[in-house]
Length: 130
Image 1 (cartoon, rainbow, N blue to C red):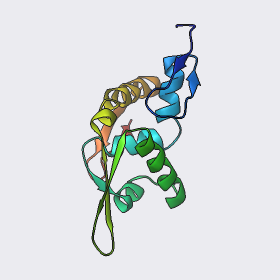
Image 2: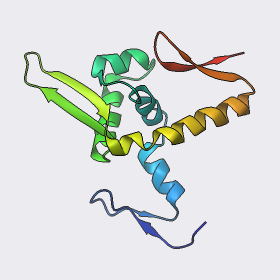
Image 3: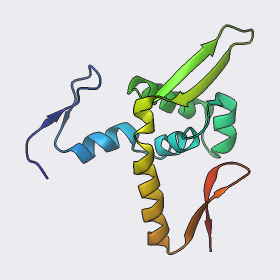
Image 4: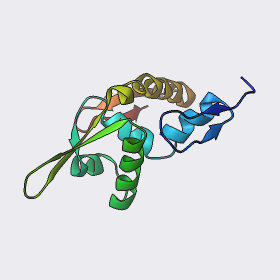
């Protein structure tokens, strides 16, 4: 691991990181961000669709996490001029680059648990099968 400091050049917050892993975890870490990104890996979803697929997340937390992912350039928020407004979320091209990382986390988790990870076809959520 390199000992020099790395500056986050993706936005203007001038955060300093001690290693690239720290920067990665700052952007995609936490309980909800990886799950949001996983949900958006193949589909564009509305807020309600994301919330339905992510049990336990409050609307306030989902909004906060989506705003942070949008600020960091991983998620695109598209507002349609309708009444009521229609808002859709999708991954940016840059956001799509994190999918292999999430797939690797799924594989690692599967090995750690000694079980098989597959997708629930009704919700596109990863599920564990014993």
